[in-house]
Length: 252
Length: 252
DNA sequence: CGTGGCCTTGACAGGAGTCAAGTATGGTGG
DNA sequence: CCACCATACTTGACTCCTGTCAAGGCCACG
Image 1: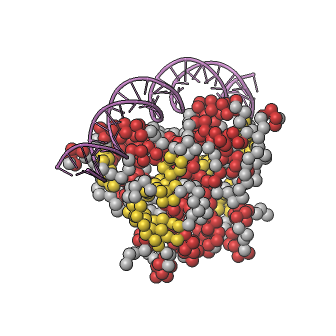
Image 2: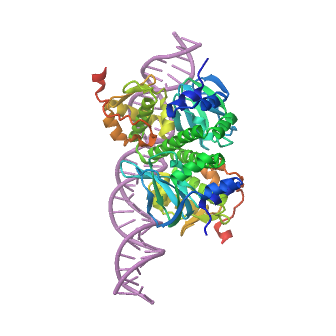
Image 3: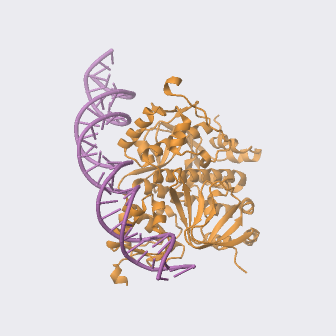
């Protein structure tokens, strides 16, 4: 018997009462696997479910009138991208699997009922949407105010920090299975420029990004370049990352 | 005796019960006037209050490591910009008066208590934060994927639409008391380029923006240029703006 | 061992930024 | 009532960051 996907995430935030656990168990779940590039939901769909990432990597995005796609967030294991639509009746964005993923669909009206009956759970979920919004604001700042190199560096810093906070990082490395096209859509740059900027970061021995694995060799320098300050992620346990230093040669 | 600022906004969303009205009245309010350019709260401040705009125009913004400011949202009368921080303990953004404004400060812990005791009100407020987040995502798309002219046009379309939905527009006109510096910080463009793009929009007889008043002379053409679709604003009453057409000459 | 993604590279173009100077505009005080 | 000042807006010239186009190389997968 599989654990309820809401349970593991909520338990991380607050200790749950028996009553709360029972309420959670009453939310119907439906699991499913999605392959790379597949859309889970599309702009204009009515919101009818609420997705939890079980594994893999999802991206929320919008396509503008010229067909250019803008990714507005990445979602790791245990993230709930659909929370942003819980109280909205129609989606105005796409949700797509950037890498092969497994997801759980929770019934939306059951989720709404859960929030009505369990205010503490509602508060935790609400808080999660606010953190997502804070990340969105930081992305806007990133895209609107930083030059290409800093922008990419910032995204990479965020990904490692979030993976680390979620217990998904391995030292200075974490999974980040994206193509350069994905990166270009997340940063608002062209793929060619993403390619060149990545090379510059690699040549400076700051990072490597290959086969879907991101490694940051010199955190202090990269974070400084990016102007990265993790405050906007509102992590509960402030794990201060100060010392994953060392050149590529030193690590390998 | 002044009406409670929460009341007018919530009443617009759902009919309130007596019990709910009583709970709202128990939230302490403190009104205050702020002058142009004044910061109401700053990045790093603990969230201790929750602001409602009574009149004027506020902007949320972040300053990057190079001192460049990015505005992430504008807030009109009755908006509650601080709702984005209700469940977060520390602010990661600034809130500033773009124009002379009046605001009401609601006590944050009283707001949290209100949400705990009145789930319907919590749901309405939660929904408001989700709409704000949806706007943020659209801004990201705007800044990340549209060229300067389209980007500005999109912002102007949004402002008129929101003013209209809030009952603050006068036909094809609304207040928008911003400087070109403000516009540049909201769009991620330079002030010089904002200036030239505005002139281009004016020369095409699409808009005027002077003395803090925005007028859109040819909505269909401007909206098309901007790729503007109001769906992301999640307005309850879909007031379809299709026909504020006419050249400047025809209107004046 | 093809074949289609994806990554890489070079050459070129252009949108947007910067710098710098000049022009309105509105508020202030003499 | 008008001179003065600060702030905002305009304009021109020039630079450069980033995008576009196009071709070639490198896998991974069938």
